[in-house]
Each structure stands twice: as C-alpha cells, then as structure tokens.
Image (cartoon, rainbow, N blue to C red):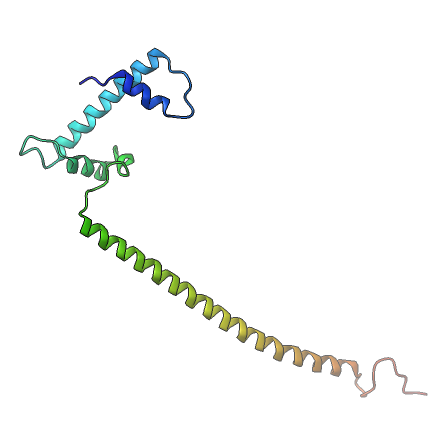
Length: 152
C-alpha cells in the first residue's frame, strides 16, 4: 500500500501551526501513516467478525477503536453505526433527560427559596429575643439602670 504524498501534504498543511513542510518530514509522515493504517486494518481483521467472509468491515474498525486500548483515541472518529430509529430514540431520551434536569433544578430552587423563607422567620424570632435580653442587661441587679447611683 502506498499513500500519495500530495494528499499527506494537504492534510499536514491544513493545520494552522504548519507553514513549511520539509520533504524528509513528508516522506516519514507518509510512511508512518501507511504503517499505522496497515496495523489498524490487520488488528481489526484478526479480531473482527469479517474474518469468515474474508473482509474487513466498518463495524470491525469501530469495534477495534472502542475495545482496544491502543486505538481508543479513534473512538470518536470511528463511532458504532446506529440506525435512524435508534438515533431518534437516543435523541428523545436525551431531551427527556434535559427536561427532567430542568425540573429537578426548578424543584431545588423552590426548596431553597422555602428554606430561605423559613430562615428569615427564624431570624426575626431570634432578633426579638436578643432585644429583650439587651433590655434585661441594661438593668443591674437592684433593678436600676447602669450608671445610676442609689446612695443619693
């Protein structure tokens, strides 16, 4: 298998960090890509279900990406195929999940507001009690206010 170097050059230049491509770097990148694709295909074929038919299928590649630690980084690039009906079911479940999360959030907000209202009531009660205690502290043991001299 031989990949066209011009295609590899186009892919490399698509990166904003790359300005000039050395010919040796292009050659090595092309060779490394060929070896990687060969290894991925070989591994997928050996571990795939297409062996009986002597074919390599997309599902074999997808399963390899999902199940192999070596190729795990390809899982987003080679996702499992699903039917349109399965996709619509997943989409519906996701939307229901979002709706449920919004409801839970609304309930949490309502509960928090109820707790805040209860806390405000408690603070009002505590404030009145503190004022009464302060009034009692103003009178000394004889029932006189502080600073009054009883000897005069």
